Image (tube, rainbow, N blue to C red; front, side, top):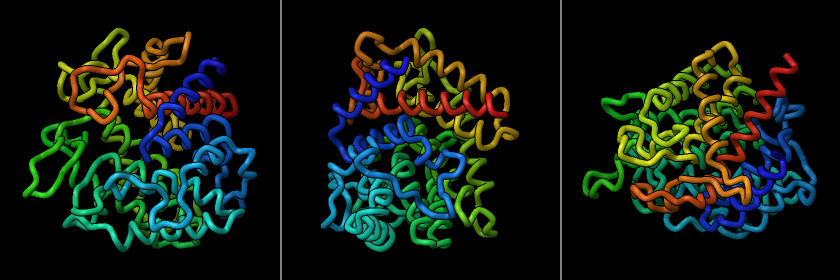
Length: 359
């Protein structure tokens, strides 16, 4: 099984081309190979500080370092996306514990997000640089970075901002009548709607990003802050998970449909893996709140995902065509982010099994 997961990870990293794909691959590498550096570790902030790993001995940081810009306002070019520029932010902070240029670059990225990017009417930071537009994808990219930067800089207010941004996005993107699930994109009134559908991967981005923020917040020195609304954040996370668990599924064994409110779409390995990984993380952090029903849903996803992996070469499919969310035609070879999501699921399931043995 370990060699198969390595094959999946290698394929995911090699397929990565876009900013968000590089960030997702780096996170998968950290969770797989160096879980003690992940925010899901028991003590991710020893002595209330960011750990100082040996960069060259940490595969996720070696990978991320190749793509981080040290001399620009943002860490990576993101083709007009403001949120995706933060996809490598957490890894830049980790590298910056021993290499000053990366510490400075992380600060510039945070300043860019907080000061230069347009905002929605409720204060949510736009996912696009030139005009205010909210994408569910943003929640996986920017808030986890801002939360991690809050610990790195000893800034309780920034931690509050990271949590608040998730909730502001929820206020806009939660859909009707499927109130618990999120629309993919909401933009300005003058622009034709690009995708207001209930995209499964968008909901995966949102729930997994919020779980990263929540883990960072509750394990940080600021976990007792009165104005850190982690209880509401947890409820929003469970809302998406509950919505996904009762949504339409397709395939044999069944996977979440590419659009959760449209059974005509194919079952999607990528979103199924990402949502299930979030459940396993919650099961360790919040065992009382994570019900047996939630665990059954995650276990069902776990079994289904494994059945859709090509054990000869590590390909995973069906997944959405890269960059073409609305297409009814899936990719059977998978995508970079799809491979990374599957690796995250393996890592989360492994850590959950280890946690159960230690209880």
